[in-house]
Image 1 (tube, rainbow over the protein chains, first blue to last red):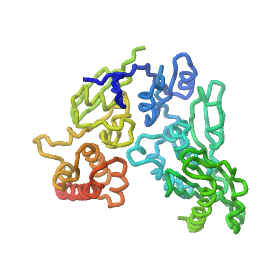
Image 2: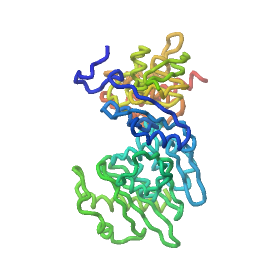
Image 3: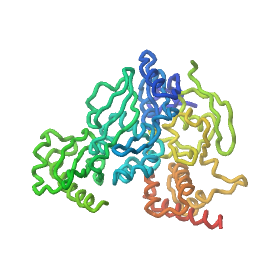
Image 4: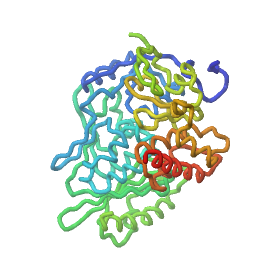
Length: 276
Length: 163
């Protein structure tokens, strides 16, 4: 009845896989403890979008650490100067939550990620911890100057969103929440009309009478590249000065990316100015 | 510690208690192999195509990349559970059949479950909303136009039956 694992077919039945232990921590401390028991080959699990597929592709799971019962990382809270999004918040819950109105455009931008069906299960924490360049939260969060909060056996630590792909510190760490600073009344516009080839997030920050646009660009295969410009920039050539000449992938060369940035940015600036 | 887990859930309106399942079993395999519910079609097995869509607590979920242990305490509906007790079809099934909103039919159970979840959550969906939802699943035959029309017809049928 069940296809054999050596049948040569692409999809294997669960019957071909080895069952694993499962633990259900209810606190951050317990989860961190499980994740640092390296002899048990622990793997964190939340929305489950990636793991079943990875498991079929021979990812080793000794102990599955099911995070969904940790209430303290499930909420969205807003204070005067910060929006905090718990790691277990799904794309669907987040993009529909009115607390996100404190960052204009964030609900709409977040709601563009994935499809409706995936949005019901995929979490913000999973999107970030997958560390995949094709996933889009790092682009949005890098543009928003977000900070990612972790707990590990030594305590708590924080990384900037755009540092995540470069850090070796995530083994044994639990992503607990994302902080988006509200200083400068950020407004975001996310353009993904060329997805998956290219996406671009632009965030407008108010600084007194001036405003600044922080831009995160990314392709499916490259991590976000971030730069900032004054909103009233007249010479768009200036924004290319800092872009590394090797920021390119097999499908988009550097010259085309340099062409795309201002094309998309001009309409983003218009939408941000209109508050759309 | 055992590598199995014990689940209680409602599947197509029937309650199941203390069902022991290996932790590695996906919901798709559980439904097809243990419950014989072969209408949940597995295809890509990585959550992309949506042919295995079932409804869990009102939300459409791909059964192929959901581990079975996730359904503990939840209410699951599969395509087999849409049929009424008297054997008549659900309005969404009727609409797909009336408008021939399928060709090869492989994606159809998933499309119908996705559409049912949409109509449960949004009884009067706009065409734009239908497109947004339907684009979650892949159909390589129809070009989607007939599926969109079927969802609109189903919405109308449901509204009429409730009136």
